[in-house]
Length: 325
Ligand SMILES: Cc1cc2nc3c(=O)[nH]c(=O)nc-3n(C[C@H](O)[C@H](O)[C@H](O)COP(=O)(O)OP(=O)(O)OC[C@H]3O[C@@H](n4cnc5c(N)ncnc54)[C@H](O)[C@@H]3O)c2cc1C
Image (cartoon, rainbow, N blue to C red; front, side, top):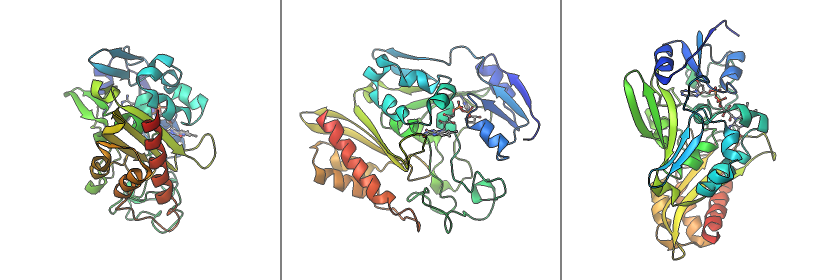
């Protein structure tokens, strides 16, 4: 590991001032420290956010939605019965996230901003496209865990966070603060559009600190669920996951969201798929039509074609579950 210095910020403003080029914010460290040990990240300075008040915990204000502080440990959300009453999808998504130890240390902001798990990216000896090289080695290599859609050219990584699709299905936004001010963006827009061929995974600007996640009142009115297919039953990233959410009125799905994880460089949504089911009662056929639209542009690599039927079946099951609840 390259030598680095460590500072502890006591306010968001101070943290933002400290996160200059060559520095990185540190939350639970469960991803960042691994990247540093592996030689993939080498910040000269770590800016620990753990000493900042007010970024830990969640609150619900009637009419104003739900707010979750970025430094909240994942386990606190997973184990809160009260939160599960407002937004049950969060518990469902976190139950199979990593391990209990990692959920104790890992935070909401860190989970959303973690780097991808592509084994070529995580190998310091390999200069893949995302690290400034000229090619994606997954394209012709070991690609069973890689993207099947939305890759354009460039990178075949998949967005790894379980929390992201779940929160996007409820229209979550994130607040980003720096010395230049504060902005609120849709959580979906925190992930760099693959069509831009950017070598950044997130749209966070230098010095910005993710301070909180907000779920609007309208998002809380949707019934949601999260399903995750894994290679083994625990401690495993999603091969494919799906978050669905909709208001159910008179047995019909209204204003639905379908978000896939594990299939694309970003949490994957296709509005036409959601429009297909909007206003209709659930049926297997309806779900199949939506799933077909969602994956219409899928172009699997040699070893990950299994993700297409897997994703379609998860979409069907998830929609059936919210319709029946
Ligand atoms: C073995 C293993 C299995 C895992 N399995 C899963 C899984 O199944 N599903 C899943 O979703 N995740 C999984 N993870 C990832 C894990 O959830 C993340 O490592 C964790 O959530 C990151 O949170 P953290 O607080 O430790 O982030 P850190 O490691 O501290 O930070 C991660 C990144 O975010 C930046 N950052 C953190 N907080 C902020 C902030 N508030 N503002 C600006 N930048 C910030 C850091 O600079 C860094 O770049 C796994 C990890 C491991 C090691």
